[in-house]
Image (cartoon, rainbow, N blue to C red; front, side, top):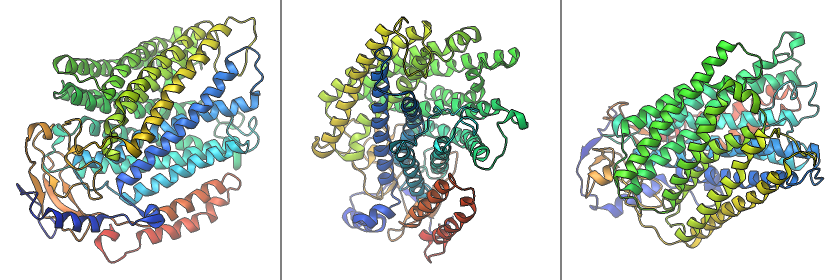
Length: 637
């Protein structure tokens, strides 16, 4: 226990509330203007930046998708040449996977997890700020390279030897590999922050069986990131060394192995699917409970399904490699694993259906997206079981059947829940409601446009249309379906356009939301919308998994934190008993300066290996500034 105890008691929260709010606001504030924007460590500000930036990358990736569909609408089209098409194809995949899908899910966690567990800031807030700047730098590197015709053209998976020095001259493949380093450093930083926040900063009384399901999903996701991301960083670093230094990790003539790349990449790549999917599962569980007006059915089963999915995710990667000539016994194992992971997914779906069945559903826009997710993900799951079969996968591998499958899984399994979650938590982000009318228009256009766009791709795949082609001959039986798919993509794009318009208009002039417009049960709605800089004037004490429903009236609170310093309550891992007070670092410019120094070194290393040596000097200087004792507990933390 630190020098002053943390007391759990019932307080009159209105007593001297104005004075308390004023003191906390002064202690936790972000300075106005440019300086405050560059130095803030407030998880809410950084989370909003992450979310906004990721959605900008979503819009850019969507434009690239429309360009590809325009090129493929007719045979022998000449709108885009093969070189530019390869860049667009690679940019679309890399952008959506590395700059949108994973970052936006972690961004939702950055904003929501501290609020949902009842703490005042995320763990390691300066590291959180650093992670955003590094993520932004990686995104700018990729898109600036594309703008000057240096965009990667080796596919979002960058298979060797096509991405190696023999076949990929220039710096395009190096830019792809270094972009991976940027985004994975950011992802690993956020994962560590979320794990520590969930384990050690939960509100008193929030035992493991009272953690919100979205927080559980982010916790499991963070462990997946920590265990899977190093594989792709090893792969991309090895590729850079092969290209710039002359090593031979992937050169069979010198003892390397091209299949080593696929093993490293897909050991990361398939858990990445669940790094994207598991947060969406937590979102769905949260939304289903709120709009069914009852606690979620099968809380323990849902938690165990999350954990089982996270474990099984590491036993699937070889089903991407069934046509590489691996031993049949190994392929049989990965077929079984690929089918087994459908079991926890089925448990989750049945729990959600049971919750809705036994509840009193309120069919608002967020719940519509949840229902659209269930329908779409079931279809994607069925085709996933199909491609888990070696004989079938051998026939459809590298065809548009696989393109259809993974879009059903990724868009159906992640984007639909994400859009529902944005409508649900938008009042928490901005204090305003999004339009219900525009939301319904957006949902139906996206839902109908998605299925009209991607379901026919299954047929294209069965008819033999391969992936990654920029044109095709007119005598092939693909023209009619491709034209239909391209027109349908416009409907899908119109739905996303309405969503973006709705978000922009609502952020400026939407209906004021109030603190808890959905009558939701979790702690993020126990504070104002949007929350103050310090999140909670008094740290709440939790007595159930749905405290705002079960603890009617006012919550018990923990007192004993000083107002003149940024302090948090540290609790035990299992039952969340108060242990101590912990200082939280103040705002600082050093995370930004460290990110700039790191970005310069990484980009410079694309052109010279000596950058690693000389570029380490400014990084060391900024890290010394970051950790130099400043004389206060907050700054020394």
